[in-house]
Image (cartoon, rainbow, N blue to C red; front, side, top):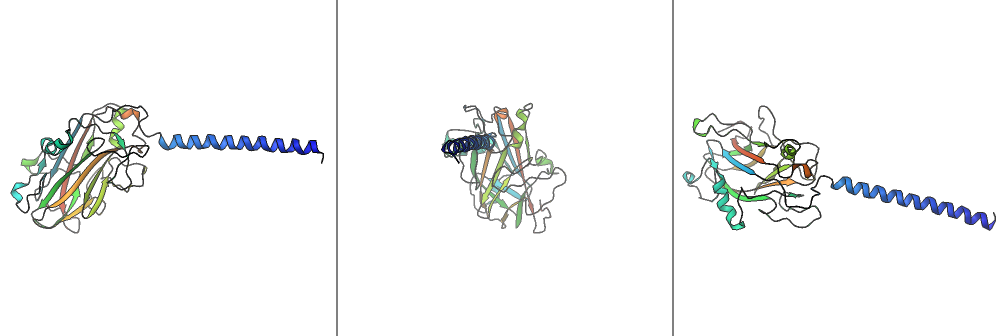
Length: 267
């Protein structure tokens, strides 16, 4: 082979290699774009606004923002927004003023923004502690069922809804809630779709409730209060957590029910 032919062949190889490197670089950029498309791209503080939260329990199960020991009369069946607001005062915020920003977590306890910086509780996501107590031993479940008791007829069951029009209404698919106790933690993902994070989540049935391990949150011993930390956030890695859901309103109702070890409702 002549020296000229040798150099010409090497130049062709080099051009092909450069084209391959350029192609791989384009693929890497596309991969990065695909992995981050779910997050808000508009650099504002406009998250999920006009946020309501109602929490209720069944007859034999009660709740409080404080630990009253075994004095069950000090506990209530419904946590109101003013009760939660009293806890949030030390964060200089309230339910009404909360704006949920897109964050993510791998363990249900520590939260970060898209590029890894730490997110603070009750600034970007909601977090508060409460205590549950029961009149008998029970397993506490999240439920979509309401109550037949006239006194608590407003307890309609767990739901995540919005009155915002499409595409803002997709916000109901981007919300997560975790329930953290000394029994461990469970994360509720309403309208659950394709898994978006490494965090294991559960959804509730659209029809009749089936009380099982997936929606069982923790166990209560009779007249023994248990602390639970509730966290609520907009999951930035969910495909629906994009610019379209900014400034949406959100109404969340949480309803808890006690069951025996076989999943039969007690209250």
